[in-house]
Amino acid sequence: MEYTVKEIGEKFKQQNYICDEDILVPVYLALKLQKPLLITGAPGVGKTEIAKVLSKVLDTELIRLQCYEGLDENKALYEWNYQKQLLLIQAHKNDQGVTEDIFSQEFLLERPLLKAILAPKKVVLLIDEIDKTDAEFEAFLFEVLSDFQVSVPELGTIKAREIPVVILTSNGERDLSDGLKRRCIFLHIDFPAPEKEVEIIKAKVPALGTELTWQLAKSVAYLRNHLALKKKPSISETLDWAQALLTLNAQRMTEHLVDQTLNLLLKDKEDIDLFREKGGAKEMLQTSLTCECHRTV
Image (cartoon, rainbow, N blue to C red):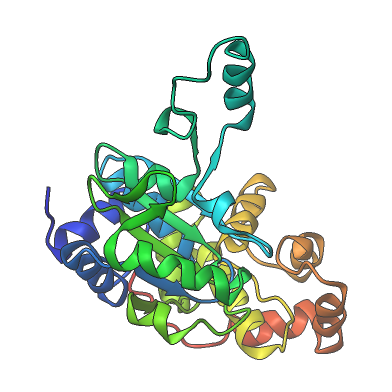
């Protein structure tokens, strides 16, 4: 089923993923043009979540390839079931030879890429944190992303039964090749403005009071924009903070409350030291809670 940009936005909102056309249009074009979508941005801005939401919107399976240093073709594409092959050979050791082809698809262990290509219906293939792999692995992906096919020497070329929806994410740990970028539709996601983050909090933690929700969103914006933190608070950490404030039955933001729950937002000792050096909770509340934000939510 094909959706318009507006319909995709409504579907995303039903899944509590709050976003505007700057995200929805690239998603729509990736679906319409059947091209991979490369999403970059800081950790925690909602890149991976787009793939998860899309799988729900399209009512299909999400196949995830989690990238890491040292990931190679075998671990991403396929491996032969050597144990099963050996058992068959041993079972026929007294025969004239093994009559079955031990390099047939029956003995193939499908890894995420091959599983997505062999899927009988369209799936969402998430290649998560592609920047953690090396240039050689990127080059291997070109065939998959260009023609949606892979080459298995023993079996030949295997083409996708249904072209999967491919989402690649990158945290920017290294520059990606021009060849990979050329094959993708590009989308960069920044941290949301306080107004947008209020919408997200209301969708995910609706029981939190409106006033406290605004105070929380503006406090997180202060941490991201006014301090040179090693790790800025992610949206998921904002939601953790919101849930913690709800659990503590907080009614308004106070210095004591911030000090008690700071570890939900700042996960590095240097960042905590910098926060305190720059005035701590008192300075954050004075700066963030007096800033002008249009309360349109």
